Length: 327
Image 1 (spheres, helix red, strand yellow):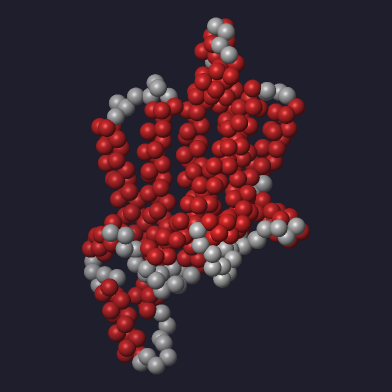
Image 2 (image 1 turned 180 degrees about the vertical axis):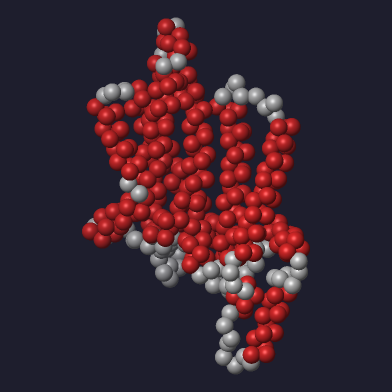
């Protein structure tokens, strides 16, 4: 297993560098002078000569006076040391901008994953065991509706109901402005602002995950080992949860890992709807403001996340499927 993991890590590193070359090539093709964009417009009291001098200094700092391969090596060295440059919008280091945004997105994603799995796994098992019942039919209709409704529609609907009509929840931001509390009080204050975006992401994810759990369980319940277990008099709960459910996890692992990666990148729209200061909103702001240091840092993060998710998927398969071997 260790040998296989080492091979996978070498493969992931190779893919990372190939993708980084592609991202850097796109970065180079972006129109405009990056040095001039970093310096900005000429400031009051600054002479044209001083402005041009500042641009030249920025050009040297960004290594734009070097050959393109050297620029890539310098850029990659900076990336590997977590030096992603400076944001031309916020005028701070990109890493200082991304760090709190990443923390906010992780908070959101952890709560979403917890509630999604808490609801979808029991619901998928319940409907699979009672296939064809009234409850199963109602859930199937509901999941079709859920799949058909875009995420931002759920967000707007929840804002209208809980924020406008009932007025019980805040509709934007990540905390009360000027709030001085610390510890648990701050967590509870921020938690109120998390409710609507978490609800939006949960509702938009319930339908697809529930259908995957249900279909996996139905397929597992048809297998011979389930019939054999029942014929031997094994209790129905043991048949469902120990035999059928474990084998239904095999296809579920694939969709779960992919959904988790998509949750980080797909929450971009939800974060924008609720003005949640996460990675998605930071990336959108970077695109709007042509802040390419921020944008390409986000792209590298999503690439790294996808590669690590593939490695995690390989490891997870060995736990849910004993037949999986590392060769």
